[in-house]
Amino acid sequence: MREDLRDGSTRLREPTRAWVTQCALSRICGLCEGGLGRPIAFVGTPQESDRNEFHQPPMHVACAERVRTPDQVVVTTAGFDVVRPDREDPDRAPRFAPNSRL
Ligand SMILES: [Zn+2]
Image 1 (cartoon, helix red, strand yellow):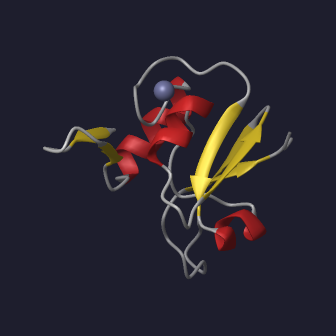
Image 2 (cartoon, helix red, strand yellow; image 1 turned 90 degrees about the vertical axis):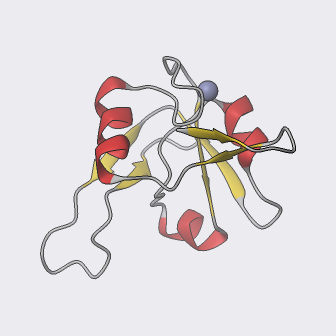
């Protein structure tokens, strides 16, 4: 979900569980809310990339490039799995795991 700032730039809203779930089920872009084709892009920190789990919902490549900050990476994939943390998981936020990186 996007937030248009006064200076004309755009940023992602903090992902809520409901929003993240909606993006996953409907396969819509986390920024512009349009339908997702392939490739699918994820924006995250290098740590998220290393772990192959992203907290921000899937996006179009162009949308991902638009909202990434200088310290974030963009990863593209043909598909993804939704990670639903169980009670033992220290990170309780839903995540996305790219399953066929390009
Ligand atoms: Zn988009």
